[in-house]
Image (cartoon, rainbow, N blue to C red; front, side, top):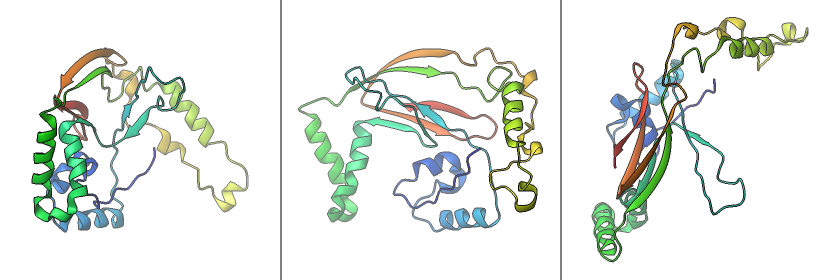
Length: 211
């Protein structure tokens, strides 16, 4: 587990809206700042699932850019996303910056239709089963964490995690998911594409919301 903390100081707060939509969906409000601070003070934690994205560039001969990227927010590409990013550069227009950004982008699109194509391979989501969360991997991690030196009992170890903390709360050996590890290929052709990573504690999923 990797502890992270996110502060709602961005212009859109897309990742926070996906993590806690009922709190951070309202923009231009002081409440998200207070909620974030109180969660830190009260040590409120919750597990989240990262999305992994790997780009394949056939024109590149190096491995740079082919390493997987992990994040809690979604993946956005296309015409609308470019406009939303560029509107912040028009800050001198004040409240009209969003209107000006879309009008100028529309005039430019008359010369070239802003359509993009995606060849994508998606892996089916799995919350945990006997295949991807085997007891062997958990036992190996437990042995590594229990390998302590004698002076650790006096000074303590910052990197130590107790054996009880390494044991899963759920017995995944009894969970079977036939779709675990399966992939499917998708070809998308659209003006704008957005893949949102919504963190639902009951059913966690990643799915495209617009294509």
